[in-house]
Length: 50
Image: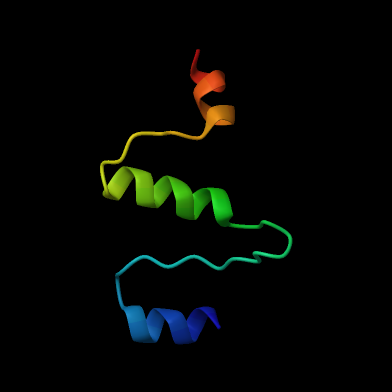
């Protein structure tokens, strides 16, 4: 799977996830927030920064 992803995406980012177990979800959320220049609005993360 990784080889196929690298072939199709080239240098563009990709991440493997397992949504059932939550593996990789935080990385995707962080990427979207950072690249989209969006503010963090999840209550559990806002309390971590306080």
